[in-house]
Image 1 (spheres, rainbow, N blue to C red):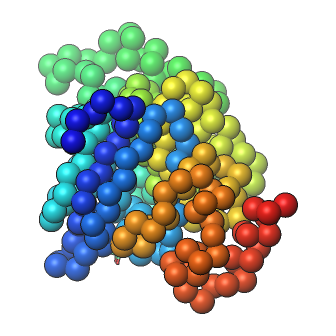
Image 2: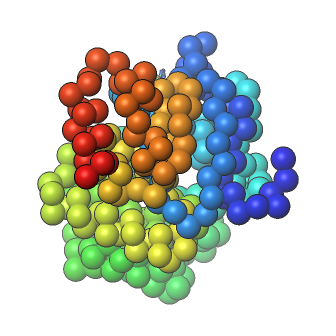
Length: 253
Ligand SMILES: Nc1ncnc2c1ncn2[C@@H]1O[C@H](COP(=O)(O)OP(=O)(O)O)[C@@H](O)[C@H]1O
Ligand SMILES: [Mg+2]
């Protein structure tokens, strides 16, 4: 596969297993640049695994992932990642500005300290998530939503054009949800491609340009109105029909 196109992420026949049980099975998808893409599917569907496979954190049994036309290994640093909140040790003694500066480590050679421009990039990123006033605070002292924004700041500080976020809206209040969405939209306007795991079907159509519907296999990829279809959703979310009717009603109005 060549990249005579604007696909920034190419996934070709990807299968990933844990202990010989496939979490993802034969997933192929090409993602275009400059858009906000949501990844939906029930618990255990393989959404986080999909993100980790793009990052090169898990090894495929079969299949290839390319970032900007290169292997995940060669493209290290071209993808930034915001992990699920539960995956971070919030008691770790580190300040907000130090977390943001971690986003620069790939650019900082091991034998030097961060340069002024790294500190500037980290501070600019904190401004983008509106956390610059908290720069000296310990991350453990922040609210969940503020912690989430700091980790988005770390990813933005990296300067990558591709951002992968795993459930950034999980467990935040409505005001924080709007603040996070605003950051995602500004990042898109700045030319970034964002792939965001999202668990709330009722906001999926409103928030994202395109949706990826996944449950071990890829069920659909496209504009929300083509993905949030009753036949597809009932296949993927067996037995949760009431939720579908809400989502579908919203889509039609
Ligand atoms: N590190 C792991 N070791 C073993 N099984 C795992 C591991 N990570 C995920 N799984 C399994 O793989 C499947 C997909 O998990 P995951 O990608 O986390 O799904 P999602 O993010 O959609 O909830 C689940 O059945 C999960 O239990
Ligand atoms: Mg997950």
